[in-house]
Length: 545
Image 1: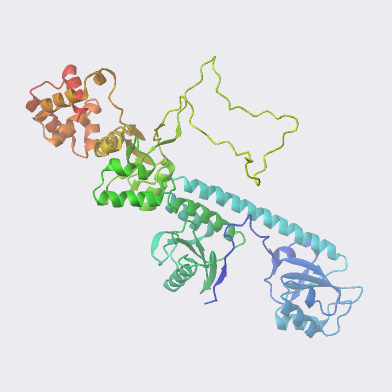
Image 2 (image 1 turned 90 degrees about the horizontal axis):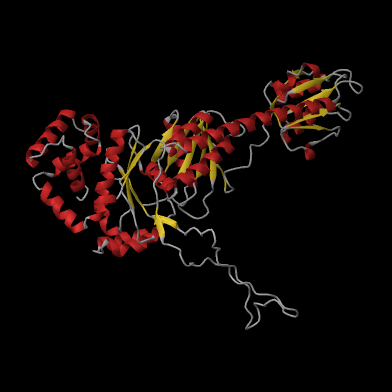
């Protein structure tokens, strides 16, 4: 196994490096009349250089196609040895006027030392060859840029899916034709996509990931290695979570590093904790609640006293949801308060705070907003000097509360592609438990009606005219004969306009079970549930519970 190559430079480059030109592509240009007469057929050309020096070694960077007419060629074996030592990719030897043919000793030396040797006819100027190489490089560069652009678009599209992290990894594995794995700092696999490499290569990839995992200061941003013909690379994700993107591919092409860099940026944004509420504040709120504090006391630590909206969410396709996918959903909704660890089959719960932007009243047609007074400069006045006592430097304007400004309003949840959401009405922090139950019912309603989002609406209209205490007392008396499951079934059935099938879907039971429960409700309440007045009164009562 090769020694890992590491770098601490940023992983995302502005574009792929200029790809090398295969020697075979240059030889395929028939108009050049080039002919390989010695050395291997495979070589990658990075530059074109012309030199008639007896020893051009000090002026070569490696990867060149060196063009020469052999003006000072006296010792072919030594000459070829120096070119190989400098890393030259190939030698193009021009015949005439110095040499009528390529010297046999030069052909033997190139064959013996493995340097491709091209015969350049007298009708082909060296500048024509150089122009052809640069044109091939430009074409290859254009192909690579198009490939990187397509990969960037595909990765960005994957990042917008309901399961962005697995989708990005799958797309990255497809683009690179290999394995893409998201690992923790300890080498534990979080998500993976693509064909699994051999066990030995997989183990080497895990060890390489530990090299870049940011568990200690000075860790490199990326590292590369090779194992048994498999190219390995690892990239540390941003955000301080210690996550690593590890890649295993059968070949490494120009532009792969740039494509991987795009994926690193996307995954860093998706996997990083959302900064809507300070992590220290959330931790303090949790500790205080565990020690007996009430929700109202800890709400300010979460960034606001409310109102709060409880959201229940499920994947539309029914797929399970992991913590990273749930966190991405929370980030898209603007909250870091996400509960995705309730167990298999359970909905994701989110707590959405108020909109941080305060609502401002609209000015009337004949009104104008008050403007701050501006000082008028007088002849002889000088600007204040902040370095002198008593002078006041001009400070940038700071937003201040204006008459008529209102407190931040409740945030409004919006549909998310691939998700089914149920949301409660905005509620104070003291009523979050009831809002949680309301959000669960809203989610069931959304699933039954195949709506992307259902938001519970607060009581209004005529119902709001009844004092809440009296309404609650009436509801308790009216619904007293019903058990909780029967009351929930009746509420769901009424909300879905008496649909047996949709109620069955929402409750996850058979439609005959719904019929039996609704029939039992009618018997216990001694009412006719086909009567619209009865339904209306029961709906009013159920809305109070």
